[in-house]
Amino acid sequence: MRIRVEHEPLAQSIAVLADTAQQIRALLEDLDSEATELKHLWTGHAQDAYSRAHREWSECADGMQTALTSAATAAARAQARTREAEAHVAGLWS
Figure 1 (cartoon, helix red, strand yellow):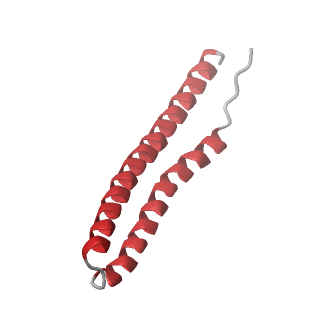
Figure 2 (tube, rainbow, N blue to C red; figure 1 turned 135 degrees about the vertical axis):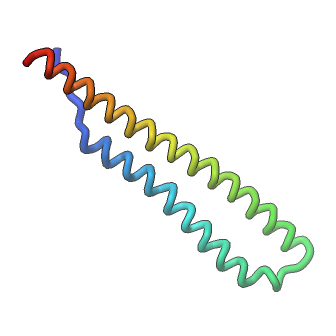
Figure 3 (cartoon, rainbow, N blue to C red; figure 1 turned 90 degrees about the vertical axis):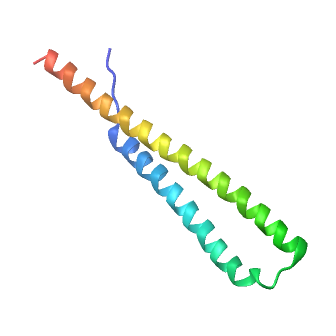
């Protein structure tokens, strides 16, 4: 039996997961920055609606960032364990 692990695609996936969370956060910060310039023009329901939407997307972005960071960490840990197992098995056959 032969088990083979391709480490490079996993490493790329780890990098993409980590980068995606940061890109999404940056886009939301840009949106918030643009909206901040307009907020003083809004009154009543518009201000309330924006505040609610901002709170919701901030909570979702935080949750997504946490999930993506956890996924990237788990993938990195899995990759490290796989490399350790490969080294151990190689040592058994040396």
